[in-house]
Picture 1 (cartoon, rainbow, N blue to C red):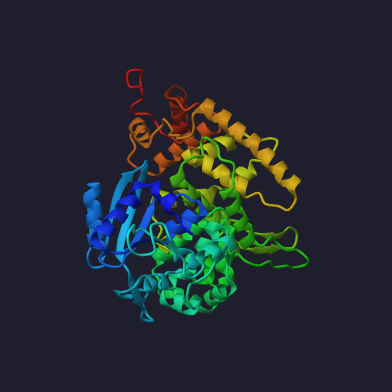
Picture 2 (picture 1 turned 60 degrees about the vertical axis):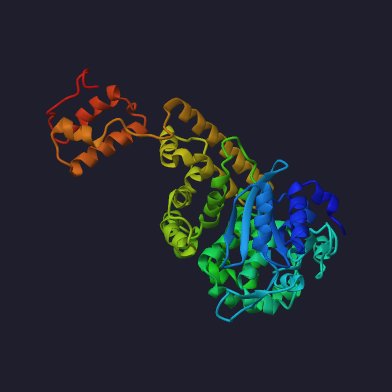
Length: 493
């Protein structure tokens, strides 16, 4: 098969080819770009392997493109970025090499090698295909070099290692995660011998850094149907090693004929529901997508710890949302995920995920809606997305009924927000104003009064304005035996 017509559409390949010919080296684009080219997936990352110095070829290409070349001499690689034909390209150059491994490390011992050596070291057949970039010498510009039938595996939708899978996964155990990640991203099957090797070798994942594992896990979470990847991780024995808290959700216990849903499979369904939700105009932040999916993954994480059996009502999981929220920082720390606003977003959604469900009633008080608006703040859309996804049942009509009720709740929240502007609620009565009015130092009394005013505002007893809330404060102060020492006047307001 020849891809010359496709490559000629992008001038960057002709430039690389001319410089490779001028240097007298054979060069090939190899790996993910070739795979995505066959799959007709967009890709702008190019890996170029040459039989010679990858750094020298990169510098020659960089000179023509008039762009900087980053050289990593210790690794024998170089990289450049360029904008050509309306595309932003990132091109990495490396000399062909062969690798060998020690049993206690996934860092290879690297030697110069042939194209065959370089393809042998690739993780999967679909990533071991190369395309020649030479106009003179070699196989010819655009010619496919596919020693392991990667093209056939793409057509069969199969993930398979080029060499013995036991050796492949023992050499670099992260490839076990990558096999499942590619299967989940592409909707491919893992070839049986390859999957059996993952099962046999899963203990080897313990030598891989948590950062690398989590990077692959995040890509699985962001795949079109993430539950597929998580089921593969579970059946391969990897999930128990990298995320035992999730595995603990699995299983159904029955007492006196009363059981509960399998919270593992329920969680995966919620994750899929989030991934496949209908997007709204307020739901378009790509940076937040990963963290919304993490919230789906963790929303019931504390159910095993809170599971109780009650003879009258059956199984309960009281407080799992609060305990789960308290667990979120520890899970993020273990996973080497960021302990910043993303973690706090996930924590908030886990803590609040039952609140909108409790509002799905005919008679919903404005007070309850106000409190949800205040607590959710700018994360209300994410919370409602999670809660909609949390409605899982084999009964389609039941699901649709709950979703229609959610439509009513969302409309009421929208109407209340338009009227009261509570999304980023801050009471007008501050602690400083209370201390100044009653001549109090920082104390419990100040906190009590501040809380009373806040609750009155949320209950709709007083408006969140000084004209309404300040007289209410004075009255409450007097009830607590306090005398104003300095009252607000119109000039103070």
